[in-house]
Image (cartoon, rainbow, N blue to C red; front, side, top):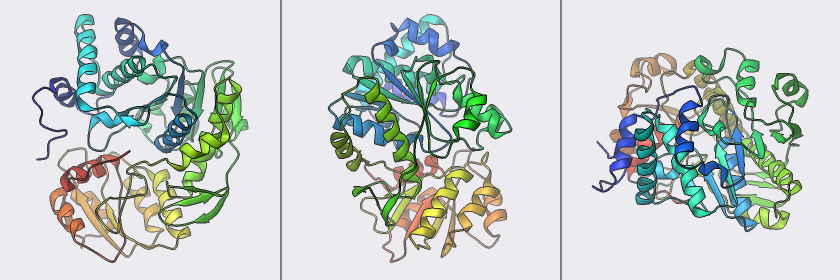
Length: 414
């Protein structure tokens, strides 16, 4: 079995973090607030942009962090989940942390946890480590991505000067609510009264306003238009964007409106410099051509909304790929299948993972066809290494992509 990070005896705190499991959820702010207090309130050492939404948070954060760095602002960015190493979740001034640095910061978080008698989750410990990293690096701004929802998410222990809401769709209903309005209310608790709230172009301010528990200043993002479209990149307003997909236009519009709001708040955001950062933006696992594997593209579409966006891009680019699919069993697999089938894939390959959270082979076959073989991760990796003239699109879950990348031995570059 592939190690989750390089086997270095010194990385004891990373190993302890991994033992907590990625999927532990605790709804409440008591743990993160107490943890951050014991660490000297590192989240107060820099201004924060809090980034919420069902989909597109990672790509919007990538555009925003790269644009801010392009403007000469020393920028921190935290995102989740990771693909190969937990260190990918914390980005400082253009690069993820080195694992020894993360291990050291996690050590501080574990010490604080022990002194308080707490049992923090994986995510709470990572957010504490991110805040410590940003304080230590003296960042000028941190882009902090919400893990799930917003009201009780560990990231909401920060006090943002700006909140961004990319979109609202049906996901994590067991925790956030059974309707889109209930889910939106949970996410909108990241907003602060009197401070800017940027809405993705698909969100109607008239729908959002009655759902708010506070009264922020709304800044709806206007839609952007694609000048040209290709499978592996997008042009917009004369600029070539390295992130592909029609849905990236919404993410870019949201990031651009956030930059405008930050400029109004006095940050040195210059459009030309911001565009240079945007054009340099890469984001592994999001319609991403895998280095060293010709004709293999990976995308972390992990719910029906994400699957719909992926299928829309395939149709617009007139591509009918071989689809390699796996997902977590707690997702709406039926709706995901319906959305992905709309791209009319040339063929379908099903994959299962070792973690019990993966959808069972029987569930995958019941949806996609009882005749289909279900591969394990090592077998899927061996087959993807073989050259093919057909485009192979691997999608369904970022955790699936991460497990497959570890088996493939692919080195990520940000």
